[in-house]
Structures are given as C-alpha cells and as structure tokens.
Amino acid sequence: MTANNQTLLQQLTQTWHNTIPVSQFMQIKPLELTRGTFSVTAPIEPNINCHNTMFAGSLSTLATLTGWGAIWLQQKLNNVNGDIVLADGHIRYLAPVTSQPIAQVACHNFEFSRLVAGKKQRFELKVNIICNQQVCAEFSGQYVSLPVGN
Image 1 (cartoon, rainbow, N blue to C red):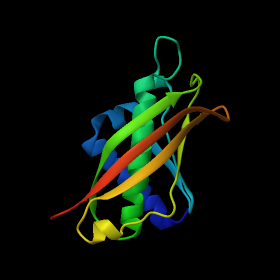
Image 2 (cartoon, rainbow, N blue to C red):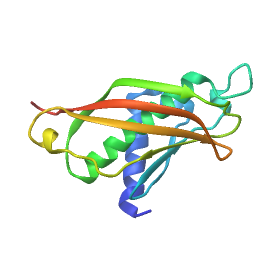
Image 3 (cartoon, helix red, strand yellow):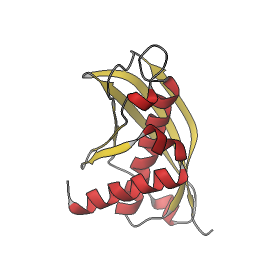
Image 4 (cartoon, helix red, strand yellow):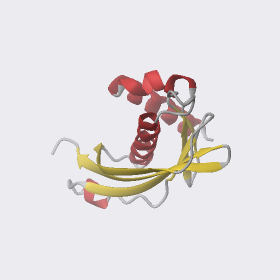
C-alpha cells in the first residue's frame, strides 16, 4: 500500500469517528486499499450479541461504511468532492460471524462525470462480509454523491 493510501485510510478513519460515532464504538478500521479492492474490519468483541456472534446491526453498519468509504476514497484519489449518502441498502445474512470479519468491496471503474458537472452521481456497490474464509453476509447498496457547494 502506498504512503498516500495509508494517509487516506487514516483520514477516512477520522472522518468516520468524527461524523458517525458508532463507528468508533464498533472499532471499525480500514485495512487496505488496493487497485481493485477496499477492505475494512471490526473486532467481534464490542459487536457481539447474545448468541456470541456478531450483531446483525453491526454487520449492516460495517457493510454500509465499507461502501461509503470506497466512494469517499475514490473521490479523494480523483480530486472530486461530493457529499455521499446511502439511498438504499439490502443485506443478506448467510452464516453467523463468529470471529473478526473482513468487509470487501470492489473499487475500480468509478465514474464521476455527473458529479464534476454539478449533478448527483449514483453508485451501486456490493460488499461481502467474510469470516473464516466464508462469505457470511452480502450487502447491496445504492449510494448517491451530491455536489458540494451547488
């Protein structure tokens, strides 16, 4: 990972913690940004439920922030500003999460032409939550980035 990417991941963590307080409590942390993938994690301990598995709401939050973070990072890398919101999201829980999960989203081929033109830009992302080398949840999110200052 490049030094620039590492700095961006630190800035993203601060943005999450400053604007979405539950992310700090959940200890959500970006792991890696490569050319094609963005990975995020959170420990199971502060997110555990009565079944000793990760709470469904924590998984949903982890997936939502992973998609949001991928767009935020790509905007930064492409020198584009936008206010990102989740417009619609759906999650399927496939297996219990019994240890620290990794949320992954593909992050390539982002198009920003509408945002650059001062119009809202839509993004459809799929986030997989993996635990013990198994996909335990699949999240589909439609995000919108709104032009800033228009």
